[in-house]
Length: 482
Image (cartoon, rainbow, N blue to C red; front, side, top):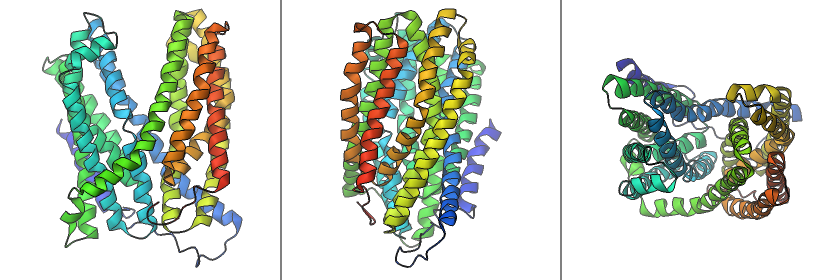
């Protein structure tokens, strides 16, 4: 295992000494009043380079995270059906608990990027530490809630009598890694705000590697069973959090050699401000999760064939979302930096270019899904009925991808601008439109295809709300803070 843990040390060293290390050398756009006029083609190329430099590593990091659950499932699956069922329930609860707090990454990215754009990297790190301290506090609260209630939570989620003990055991142990998971979210937001998506990619790959090795060792080598898988996840996630903290601490020592400890101390006012900024994004995230839950519940009412096809369709949808979300992450970092620098013209130009990227990427993904829609089913199932339902639903997914491309980009742009309250209200409106449309599907005799057209309506509603906001220009608020 020594080589695996050495990967963490290499990650930290590489991140700190890299010439592109934004903690040491944050990019500072020229003040808008002094920026010379440049040909449109030159501006587009600059934005393209920024988008690619941020989006490609971000995509790798986004894809690496779900692999944790996949590795756990592959290892635990050989222990027995009850153990795998217990893991499925526990992993769902754990993933939900962490994803609810994804605002730790989003809000931190926007706040840090603004400070970087304003040319104040020390304040950017201070802002990032507020998010990290909030992550630790929330993690402690989640542990306090999960440890005594793990068996009840497992039963509430439908775990059978044989699977419930395994689910409770895995949930109790893995909950100890939740503070590390939340710190990873917040620290990822810090580095994205500092225009660095490479380090999160390296840390994610290192964490995945360590997690895989520990699972094999602890589950089978030491005979711990499902508990070994949980401990492997805890150790890997805590190690990832430690790697991030080393990078942040070294960055603080560079920016404030005489008072670097002051940048790292908890600040009650800053933590409260971070929490307040996160509330609208929490509402947005919960509303989005509600859409997915309603869709799954409606699919379950349609029948076993439909719910099986729906789950596969949702898996494909999620994979496509990772690709488009990478552009949104670039949008968060770039837009926040331009607005922090007072460059509203640059922010608008970057937004326009990223929308073009979203349309093109969405169209390419849509064409790919349409071309392969009949080939996906055999990978997941041998049931002809499920394959047929899946193929039809995937055609709807393909048709909606260009819309998704624009939605994801504008979502990232408004997050980078710190426009959380509007995102919250627009997602609540979207939920209000989607819920009755989805519930009406079985009542009107519709099937899975109709349900996914309702999902398409949901994305069109989001597009309308986000497009109106982007056109209004009200999101363009310059300065080190919104």
